[in-house]
Length: 229
Length: 229
DNA sequence: CGTTAATCGATAGTATTACTATTATTTAAC
DNA sequence: GTTAAATAATAGTAATACTATCGATTAACG
Image: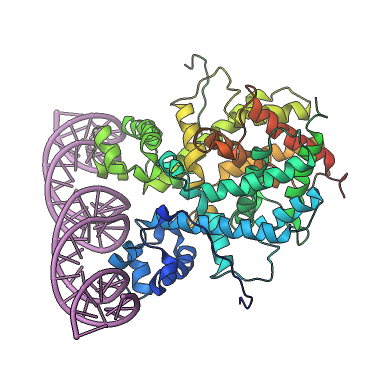
């Protein structure tokens, strides 16, 4: 619950929707229930028809908000990255140690360090969608067109954001973008593998094994880049 | 061209197909053209109808070989991993240094060190499918059922294979599976990002930047796991 | 040489998906 | 109280993802 005098509001490229889902009750229902249903049915099994039946409206009404379900997925992922940007700003406010900042960032990306301010909607359900379905928003034939329309801007901002932290640790580190995107996608994969394909990951020895693994991976890569033959 | 007296043959779980595509000319056409068409149209745009028109047969005939296009994708990815297992065996035959073995493995996984023995079919086209589409074979609602039927066995074998190399470098390394699956998925992502979302990766400074990055990442993680606070 | 079985092509048909269009009704805005 | 906007209701289309049936061809076997 948000009891404060300000609240989080995601900045989303308006071209992702036909009508702003935040602007009406129906729009909010579309967002809330689509998160639920994508997790229940998987993105392939999810359709606007099923969604409209569940929220007691018609397919045509849903289509007035989103061109198709891929655009809806793009909207959800962009919303998530805006939320992450906000979480990063909060958790690293007034912190100077760049290593701690990196640790915090990795914890936030692992959905572990959530500030007490709750997000609107089901943020855990949304995180599950990010882990399982979000790569389907860019592994598509029209990725270049989507990219030129700025549909991946929110994701890119997070990568740029964490790149600055890494460069604070070592301004000479050569491949910060590769490191960050490897870690982000890695977190999502490992969480999925832990549930569905456990032999592709390792049994968690402790609570924060995931942050631990990726933080150490990052730090050792940064520190060792010039020490290896 | 294979001019030798033995040739590569992939071992695939027979439950992935209804009729072995290797057993007939039509089956081989299905495999060859589906690799082409999935790359041209993307997996979502690819249909059995379009495939059958292209190879001059009927939809029903294609359905006699594969239950649906997801099973075909599973077949293609399994075929790829069998091919990789064979490549790994060749490139690391008679090599003792586990670090060199790891480097070779990462080079093979990056589609860079191909032995002179050509694989049947378009291995580069298949590799593109692996980078872009293969995660869609496990990010599905019925992943657990597919997994229990052994449909990801060939992938798991590669991970187990490279885990042994890592444990040769350091028998005490705690998270070899996480490291390997992170690297494998990372390679595929970075190659895709380099073409379509370049701000999520870094501009390649040299030819083997990708192997270089992931090899250093692996080695520094292995060497440093106990040196960090 | 003839029978049988397997394979494939041809055709047809169904349920679902992914939309688009139209109209009437309700709600909100001024 | 009028006007405009939003939505519900209905209908319809093209494509997708299959399934079923039926001959024609080929191969396998005795």
